[in-house]
Length: 147
Image (cartoon, rainbow, N blue to C red; front, top):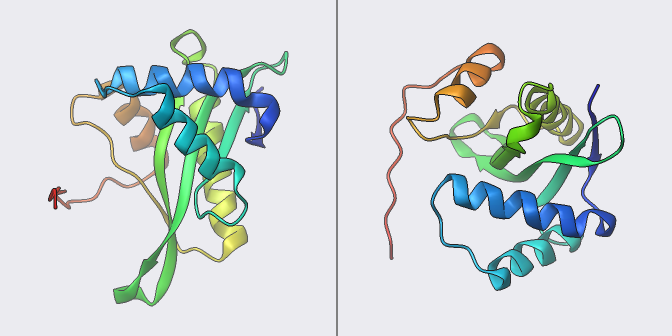
């Protein structure tokens, strides 16, 4: 059984490890200063970004999710964007990822959002298998423009 709780100051050290693991998985050079910025956002109740932590049976953080609202003008509604989802490799298969996604859906319902949206790498096959069980893959292609 996995418990999902809002990220709090008590999770800081383990969150750092998990988030560094997430960056490493996606081959992103991430510094301690970058993590400190994101942590600051998570701890600021006025910031749009919020976080969830998956706890194992012993109460040890094994996964994280970061979410933020976004406007859906064409649908005249709001959605939640799941920016980051990561589970410690040692805890994969434990149910932490589906529990984090279910908690994201609950957060969306509580905020009146009409969907939760996320992206993943095309070659992230293990995660895609899990995602295919709980959500619909879209046909949209993503572009990035660096200003």
